[in-house]
Amino acid sequence: MIRTAYDAVNAARSSEKISTRRLINGLFTNFFELHGDRHAADDAAIVAGIAELNGVPVTVIGIQKGSTMDEKMATHFGCPEPEGYRKALRLMKQAEKFHRPVITLVNTPGAFPDVHAEHHGQGESIAQCLLVGTQLRVPYLSLIVGEGGSGGALALACGDQTWMFEDSIYSVLSPEGYASILWKDAHRVEEAAEEMRLTPEDLLEDGIIDRIVPEVKDDKSMGQLRQQMISEIDTLRQTPIEELMAQRHERWRNF
Amino acid sequence: MTSKFETPTPSELSQRTDKIPDNLMHRCPICHQVMTHYQSADKTCPNCGYGFRLTARERVEAITDTFEEIDRDVTIPSRFDDSLYLQKIERAKQATKLNESVLTGFASINRQQCGLAIMDSHFIMGSLGSATGEKLTRLFEAAKQKRVPVVLFAASGGARMQEGMNSLMQMAKVSQAVADFQAAGLAYIVVLTDPTMGGVTASFATQGDVILAEPHAMIGFAGRRVIEQTIKQAPPQDFQRAETLLAHGLIDAIVQRVDLKQTLSQLLQWHQVKEA
Ligand SMILES: [Zn+2]
Image (cartoon, rainbow over all chains, first blue to last red; front, side, top):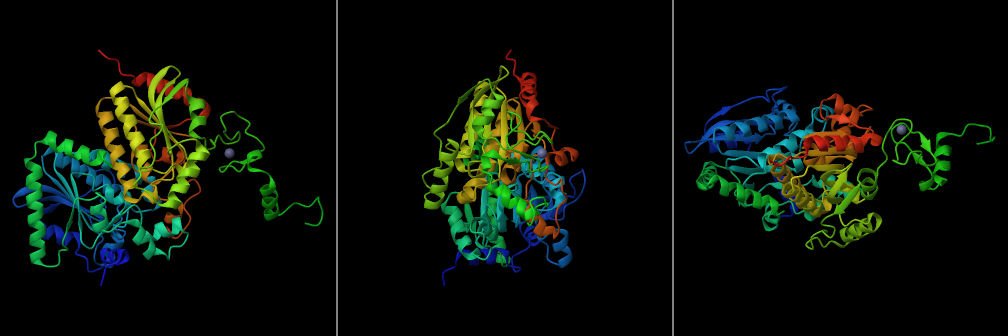
């Protein structure tokens, strides 16, 4: 059976999808979580810290949805608040200072839309992630794990490469939002998904992303993803920094 | 309504006002004052100071001594071939006499030289298309070469859905150009105008060294309707207005439209690069 774009949307949102935390524990060793934005709060939607990838210290920043209902409430179902993006920002700068590659794992419907987030500068916090992320003088690799929702996902995916899992989506807004804004009918979601080119295959073809990687379902597939990451981070680390920055500049300038 | 001396109901009133041609009557969206014509040349509400939406060309008139447009012919890339979208673009071009949602160039503001970008909400809600991002990026690159500050008037509903991920990518592309420009020691001054929302707020509109706003301008990331659906209640009255952003420390100052030219030229003067 041929998979439709809407199948991809459902697969990306599936509760069977591997959690960000399990992915961190499978890909890296000695993960040590770092908390807080040093100003106001510690957003549970962003799980971040230092770990080792094949013995190399890296900074890991993930967006997590949580598994239990309590966790889901705390993370707003994977929708970060400005404090979360500022935590990410702090740890990106820290990674740069200590020459650690940055690896981000993105799974979010989007930045959290509420009054608190607006009052605390949701837009500005994402804008700073873009300003700092595109200029970060260390290798910066991103993986879209499930949902890559709009600016809230791009904030943590503006480095050297963006990869996507087979069952993931990345889009400018949700297919429901697209249908309701463009056709005033949120029920035309399947049609919207088809039109939006949000599947990994479409996005690879359109030059938006760099690689599609197989879903992690067991130890074997975890090991395969880990090998791909080790190899790519090695390549990026061996690239002279000015060359790396020029490549990244070129990547974004061409859009 | 039975007698002509009776107070009309709100629905009767709105029916009556609907019959008055739009260009003869303006209702302030903030304080609801009705004006039969703009009482000030700068199109502001005499009651509350709200600045009505200006076209990019009107803004050029209001703010500059001289203006030289660049990249006038930059338009949507040919890979976007959806006929409905192309029609929309064509109508926007005819209505605004612009080829994209931003007008870019080099200007003199009270004799202060600068790069100038003005977004026009009349062009598909000032949405961020690929060509919008390209024009902004080129402006920052050119202003970096000339070593002059950049002033940007933001006015946008956010990303342009019809261009999908290519629109989203512009947020990072322009951010990169802003970062390069600022790293060269040059000043970037933003004026947030009504409305500045979505992906534009979440990128170059909030990356200025100085961020100004016009009175009562609606500024935010998420749309009001989306927030209402999330929190299951109406946000406060003054939500996403310039005054609220100022109170929360998100912008530097609110400037009345009548003072804008003077304020900008003063800020530009302080930030002109003096070559050794
Ligand atoms: Zn008013």
